[in-house]
Length: 275
Image (tube, rainbow, N blue to C red):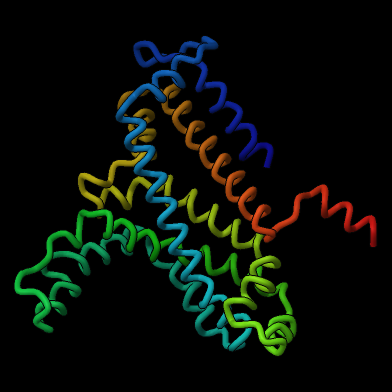
């Protein structure tokens, strides 16, 4: 882990304080790259777009994963659906993107079905190259990650606890909020954050199905490394996104703690000592 993750990250972090001159990296310790990034309207715009894409994708993915994970954990022991979820990882990332381009195009399946049903008279071009297309495609790609993490979290909760709460007159929503959510909170937060990071950093999908609305921070960072050769600026922008992800995690954790879904490490330690 130190060799393959920590060391490269530290090297990239050091690059963010250096400067680029004539396609050369000059080891100067300056904050120019960070200041120029946060003062750039383009960077702020695409970063906001990336954050919105990540938040929407993560929220929808986690919400969809809850009934799927509940069904696979407590209702059926069949592994067929579970294996079908895993099989999606064997299909090419680009193939799935092109599949959605075909489905959402003016001559695609969705427009064709709506035309046949008489709901529309002409194909809707807004299905493709729009925020809608980006959201649908990203949810399809990253939903399996959320499902597997939520299944892992729910598998630690005994079904008898949920049944007991229902026997005491708790509604299904109440049983989820009082039994499932507190015990699976860390897994739900983990699923949300993983999906958010993957979606917010994805620049291929928004570019291919989002059109003019598909520019994200990931694409901007990639251009700094591939086209302009400004590695220090790209490194600084990458760590700004990293810092925003950490900030989001802290906010979500604080909200979950305030709602009583999770306990602070200090209170958990106190409860353990009392026992």
